[in-house]
Length: 187
Image (tube, rainbow, N blue to C red; front, side, top):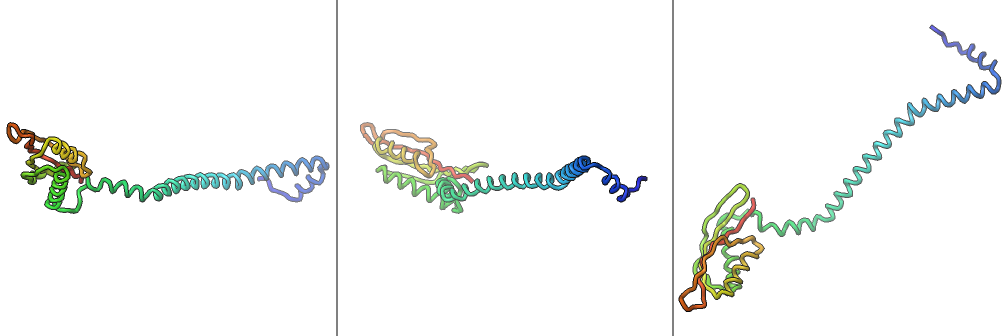
């Protein structure tokens, strides 16, 4: 085993010329600099780069979230447009009553004479509930088409499932119509 002798090292260095000592000092300096770089500076710089990258990603996420928060009211308003399509906390009877009132309002607006209007049942599927309303009415063809258009373009998602139109009498301009209207509610 070789013993490290400081006195012998000092004696060897003192016998070196000025130029050789300068070269040795520069070599020691560069070796120390490389060890400092590899052992301390490079790991710290690497850790800083990874932290900066994480910060950039978090900032991007925060900006995206801030845009969503800024649009929160718009999203709520847009979602509110579709509330009438989603099953509410109302009972089935209340829901059917609501649909009957809406159809009656459309009939009054179109000047259609409702003879008979009654619930036709409920059909449940995995993706929706469908309320049926059976009605009989009399009207001029213009009024009848206006009523049918009002039903189909209703914001409450009413659909005319089937209808049958016939004249009230031979020479009458009034038509009798029986139809089934449904309202679809999403769960």
